[in-house]
Image (cartoon, rainbow, N blue to C red; front, top):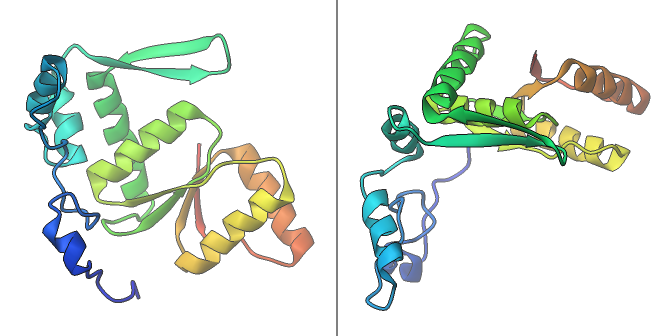
Length: 182
């Protein structure tokens, strides 16, 4: 089960920007903000969810950059990001993920992480980002998250799968997840 529904305190209920997930995707305007901030706030009002953000930018000329290391950068347009995320989402759906499923994003690759994150957002899948580390403490943390979530899906790379399986075997544990790797 997912536990009892969240019920914020009276103080939080009175604040429109509470943390229930029903807050607007923009900050409240303040009379003392500069004109650039007011412009950004007005531009953000057209978006109510993260899906609105990516689909609203899909036809625009904006871009993002994937940064790997000090010198490796790759720029793609919002349209390319949207299409890549849809492709990854299709892959997730072919492997059995449905809206509401938890997917642990456990990848050292920035592009795979970003594409996977947006695929989750577009498909209603709950992304669970977990930092990839080199120590056994990081692997224990991942195993604790897997145990806590039950049988989540795990999105990672082939080399990470091999390391996790080796670690789990040495500790008498099981990854106990459906692994999706690229």
